[in-house]
Length: 252
Image (cartoon, rainbow, N blue to C red; front, side, top):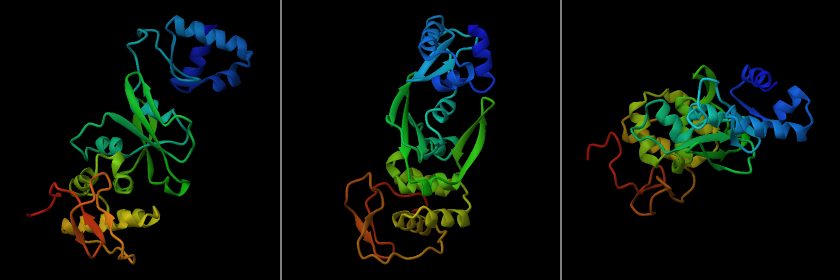
């Protein structure tokens, strides 16, 4: 009985929820909880988070088997996309290895910071209008949603604190050979003028000026909101250049 249930669930996904199992088996919930507890004790499954379980292959040992962290991340909330620093690393646009897996979603989730099998996960909720530019990638033969290269850069300019600071976004712009028309379209669509200013300034510094709207506001924003508010002002883009490290492409 136990193996039959697991085989049926594994055909759909290596991770399943209590509600999915209930809908498939129609076993009384009280009985199902007992079955799941026994499955976990016997090493057939392992709890990912409350109400979600990972199926352990018969050839594997409990506590020593897990899925790729991106696969697990994609099961934590629906819809979801691997994003920010994690997506930068996936595309090879950062030398840093983030200690946290960043997941973007327009959905609500009670717990936004989780630790699962020793890996940290950060769920970043955004407005529905900001959830776009997502593509499918196959990881361990499982489809996983991840923001495309241009959307990843724009997201990192939107929320640099989830990307290791503005320097990581600048490196991605310099080395990632992005589609600049797509970058401009995404920068306008994300509806955060700080993104337009940061993108315009960085691309201009790198010798690839873009046809972006100039700021109308007289107030100055921080180039990098993760850094202290000190540095020279750039009058064209109305930015306080508060990054001490020279940006990629600088000849200074």
